[in-house]
Length: 227
Ligand code: SF4
Image 1 (spheres, rainbow, N blue to C red):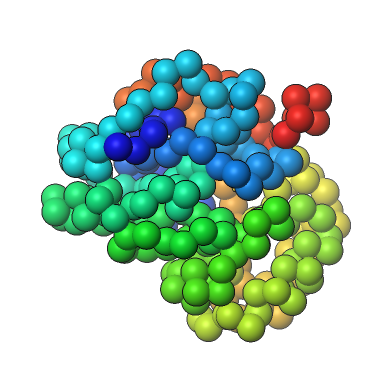
Image 2 (cartoon, rainbow, N blue to C red):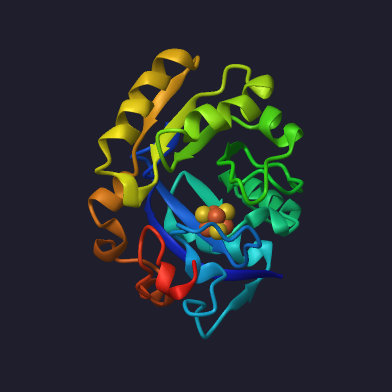
């Protein structure tokens, strides 16, 4: 049984599939605990929902099928702290593709159809996850972020798109944007990463399937609350 933070029907706001409608399964729990986490409801005591569902992979696949979407995004939290074999298999059984969003710091158990690795300093990605993944997403926290990350990541890069995505609280920092533009010239398949869902406030606008997902969680972190 998987601990489920929320399920909802929306659209992918990031990466290669940006703009495509999708069904989301957000699993509970994350030991990485980034200071600017935008999914703190999956792990931070102040934002954890009162009622954490537990559902089998087959039950979750049924909800995904009812959504009528072409594919399902498995996210978190850090979904790879769970064994995703049953969930991926259940989605494949109903002919629905599974897309995984992970920090890459934990072994990927299961066979998702698409893997996005977004590395985090608090728990660095495993080389085999970087090499197996379909795209990378670097969160750009300051003007030095990409340089520092690229020293770690470049040895594992083949041809994956590398999305350079500004950390939300830095979105009006010109130095960060200058570094993003500069690095799109240096990295093969380097691209400017956007978060369309945040720009349009989709979390507040889309009528989701899960009332628990309406809990407001501050974007860009909140020092006063310890994350
Ligand atoms: S890895 Fe993702 S879910 Fe976990 S703390 Fe970092 S941003 Fe939040």
